[in-house]
Image (tube, rainbow, N blue to C red; front, top):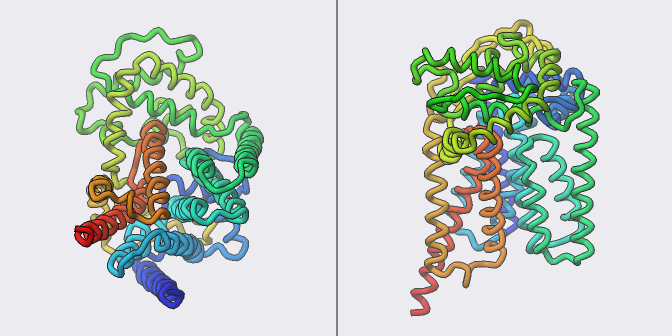
Length: 482
């Protein structure tokens, strides 16, 4: 068995190197989006707080201690993903008896996925967060059937690490604590781990709040959450067929006047040409001409510390304004934002994955400075036609969801819980619980896009394949009994 596992390690290393070398020939430069420049500026200025968590910026800074070569940074995050995916892969193989072809399919999903390769070339936290999340999920599986204090301590560390990289990790403590409650630990250890988890995350939040005050001048844990709340609310408000005159409280008069003036100007724009059209995107949060921007049309906020300080200053007000709009029009908010985003979760737009460098041939000054480029020009040796592949991924996500649900139904129809390995049953419940919680959080929190869904796509496909494998075994078991 050990020799078989080592073969997979060698195969993963070889496929990683081949894919990386071929890919970097066609894409000598990394892929940049608006988020990328914010992370690079956070690393360059060594700040401990920003619009997003700074965990990924710290990874950039760590690699920068040794070299500022962009290829090294891309390789490091691609390599980190492979290490994490191998841990997840070997954990999954321990859950139940997995046949050769099933193992190969799972391996391909984890290590030969084009989306992971292309996402690894982005200067963003996405693939780093996916890798951490795979380890976090695998540790949850192991805690149920292989509980140990060392594993629990490692899990708490990984949980905190995920929390520093992406705000989507806000749901991870809920899932972790629920699983730990059912693990074979003493009540005292469960309580202690819960208190330690709360204290770790609480300390991080307090530290980040204080850092935000030093960096932006406003004391808050995240300026991003206030802006996201306002952006979501304004999106729903903008798509109401009729908007009655709203007598807003005095503190909202300024921002509401800008919003209504902007929305009135959109009345002359055909629905198909509206900048805030479908699919749902964070237009009102990031577009330079959004009425929420303190200085509409200003230098792009992701590379402008002055603009970010202004955004942070109004974030508490925007948080209250967003909640106020939702409270005034809850039905419209459900109809024009929550419901479309609910379906968008199952069919997420490809967004940045389907383009290279935001369709530009230049990068911003912070990228040129950090990576020591001789000029701001970037290029590829590819004609970019292969990026059309990612336009198929939204449909693939829908197929994965239906495949997973169908597997669940078939699993119960053959009486899977009565004969399946207890390790698999526990992992399936954990994975399903995570997906349900993540679904609700994602729909409520922000517009769903493909790169946020790749982890769930992988999990759904892996468990879907394993469910059908168990169902096949169940039918064989039933035929032997008869």
